[in-house]
Length: 213
Image 1 (cartoon, one colour):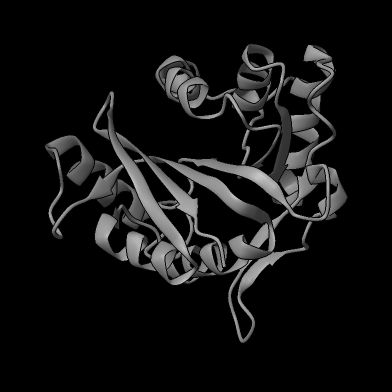
Image 2 (image 1 turned 180 degrees about the vertical axis):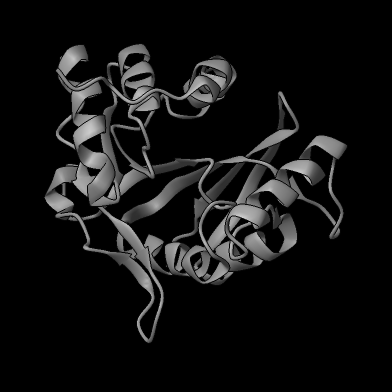
């Protein structure tokens, strides 16, 4: 039998993240998670928020592992994970787009969440991710991103500086992103920053809201 994939960091960070998600997602009903990874967050958060339909997504290579977690949890609010990738190029965006009826109606998901993804992908893919958000999000939907960020071009801790070095040694395209640059991408897509929250282990939880129009 194939073993479920496992991330120790998911177990470490899930409770602080959950506490903030519960505070912000009480009125949400259909959420898309971008970059679900192992699937651990999906089952933990969906179990704690039964009112919320949690749609996991990731690169096709990760879908079998996510499926194992979803299958074992057997939650009524976690549909099968879908393939979704941030694709750069002449028409950057998130492809293939999920069918919007999965979000409940044609208006889109009323929340999008991603954890520990922006520093893994290349900057061109980060740009593509933000470019694709408007096609997925309902008016006034939230976009929530968790992970480490720099401010004013400076690392917030020695551990983040060391982590950034490790990331770049593995893949020169990756690295901890500057908050100001990421916020500019969000603003260009009609997203306004609502909260920038301090999280354990020198991480942040950034919450943007899509503006009408």
